[in-house]
Length: 178
Image (cartoon, rainbow, N blue to C red):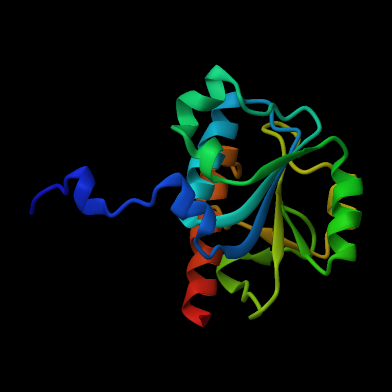
């Protein structure tokens, strides 16, 4: 085995990334406090080539030194927008026929491995803040909920880790359908 050199990875330029086909997934960050988590989400969103990130409430926006430190330039490739009110954003997305999904431990949530995306449907995945999760008002407005199964004593994951797990699983399933 040998590690690949950067030029062997066939990385897209920022312009090529912007023009490339995306998976029909939007990530919504609801009141995420950690700038490092925000940067990590940008980097993960770039890796899985999602459509867009919405930063809501107190979630910090680029440009910011702490976001840049973990995003490693992904704030330039991934489309993003600030939306002050997550509930207003969800209402707008519903009017566009986007299926909103809270990633949260709630009654009636679908376990991540059991979620089956539908072909041709655009999804918006809502991730909440590090202490309180997705706010109840946003959960109530969501069309669905997905829970990441956990088997230890904590039953909570860092938000950046949660985004990575969910985008991998849903992105993989969407790409298999294509």
